Image (cartoon, rainbow, N blue to C red; front, side, top):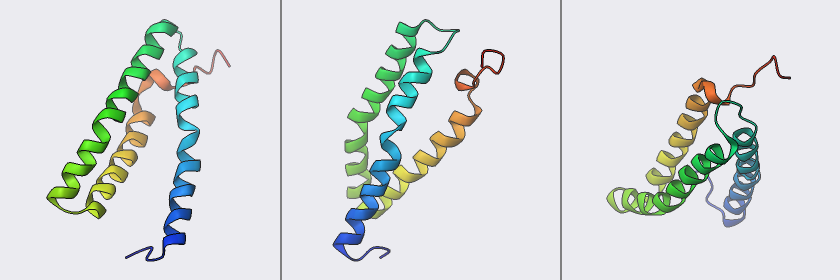
Length: 101
């Protein structure tokens, strides 16, 4: 077990929360500043994807935890997070246009 103590685990979750708290405003800002897609449509797409993740995340975590254990379900969610980072760096829609800057 990596973090056997309660306080260490709480601090680890707090650090993760601080790290992910800035993602949502950044994504909405990038979507709102996009020039190829109208702002209303871009924000709708971002909101829809976030609601799907919000609704599907807990049942998926629970299903994986019941099939294996909670440790594997959180590890899989962590791998999905790494996959999102890789995919977001490849997607051309979120790249900053250097000519505009």
